[in-house]
Image 1 (cartoon, rainbow, N blue to C red):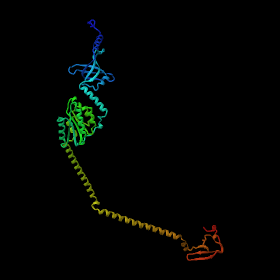
Image 2: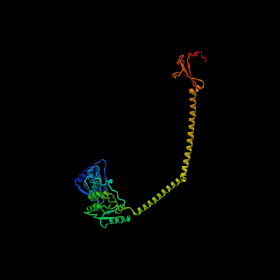
Image 3: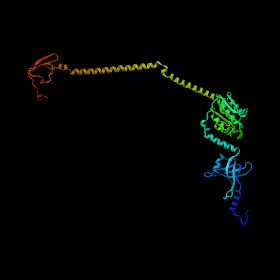
Image 4: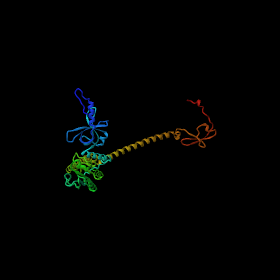
Length: 412
């Protein structure tokens, strides 16, 4: 029933909003397509808001959705085209119209990007993108395997730039479709063939730019796993700088263009010749400096007196020997003289203390008949025969009497 109102009898705002909310919410939920132009994730809240705009008309609406619905949609960013299952509703507090979303899915390219993102996450979890597992490119490969389309611009770019940089380089092409349903299978077979050739030291997979759908074969899981399993280093040169298929992430090196891939796999002959020339000049300068240093050392040695006159060392040593010999002779003579003086002094002392010297002064040595020395009157008895030994002979005498001395009466 329509409401009646007048300036004198206006309707309460809450009643109008309530009726409007009831009328709007009688509509059914519907799938709509739009581009996300604004996304607001509210930290700590389970409800988030995004703004959808029509692809052609300047029409936009606000959409609310919970965390589970937003996370289930995969990587949704501003600019993503999505399909949303929404139901219109009105907020009673401010009367604003919004759409509650219960299902959100990427649409068109967005759906492809979501699938690719899920595949990337799965392969990354297995370690296929681990930088520690990537192989180094050889400095100068014997042969270069090239997987590309026959007579393509990518093939010409790689071959011409490789030969321009290193004319002797050998490029072994292996052709395959680089677009369409059979592309992933043919590129995988060509990649495995190149990897099986022992002379091929590096493999380039090259293709020009294109849309996401055109480059989709180079994100094929089978091709990616085959590249990861290659024993030969793989260079991915797919599309342009902004194109990033999954093969770029698993390859050992990623080139922004086929021309850039050619620069990666072979050095520049002109630049290397310049490097060699500089190295030769440095080596020559180092050798000259080394010879000059050694010559200066040799000149310094030759300027020493011992090398100017080699016999000088012998003369100096001879003079030293003569000096030492003289010192030794003088030392020996002083030692002999010292010992001779000591011997003379000792001999004089011995002679002064000998009995013969005492006898020469008029003393005699008394002994008994049996040769015992008489040192005291107690050693003899009256009528006993004693022998007096003088300097020139012996005197035999008889003891008449023994008279001891009185020491107290002897003069001092």
